[in-house]
Length: 346
Image (cartoon, rainbow, N blue to C red):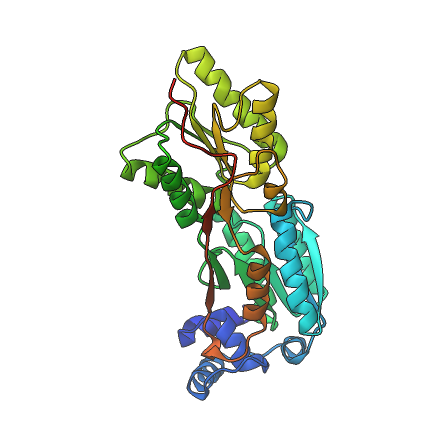
């Protein structure tokens, strides 16, 4: 069986990306000590470098691939704008691909971008929690990196990639505490599907904050859905129906962990004649441009979406760093607007 670059990396005790840079002549520098260690391992194992891979590593491709769930979603649109602006400043073109949150489509897109020899890939969609899915994506990205490609991820996709760390958990916890400070004690939460790590991080932030405050969400008051307007509306309907059927009090605050979901929540409450924020306060997450145009304007957690895209491009194109992965942090800030207020005392 032929010796692979992964075999060399394991023998040398370095990352796959470092081994690739040391042997394939990447523009991203590797220290001479590490380079010599990798070359020694390659010689010991009888590894034969791939000539096309070396050419790709030294090439200066003119395209950056961007993988996201849906470019029509303002959250991803904001990130894509930041990627496009940063790529343009570097003299590159950004190629945006929507995957609809389907890991199979994401895998196909990675392979296609690899085949088209893009200079870098930005993973802007949510990371996944399924171990098998993660392994398949990692293998495809490793093959791309082995031939000199560069990868940067927005949110944690694992230790193999440069990462823009987003304060999803911290932002959700801060929002929960802010609503509790207004006097809210009965919460409902609408989050995304379990397969998405972002949804889990945000939900963990809310639940951790509720525990710290000595509060908890009631039965049926945590609903999962897709991060869409329709998903938010359906989840809000289920929450209202659960409260009615069980004879329990309605929540005084609903946290939708996506602004787009919150739009659906507001629509369902409006159609049921439930006033916001007089009867129920509603908050979202992301601070998309639409948030200030809603009536009432949406309280939310502000993320620097465009800057997140820019940070990812900088990481993907950075020079040096000895072949180690790097991170950049994107903070989150609670913004309270008209959709939240102190709960009404009947």
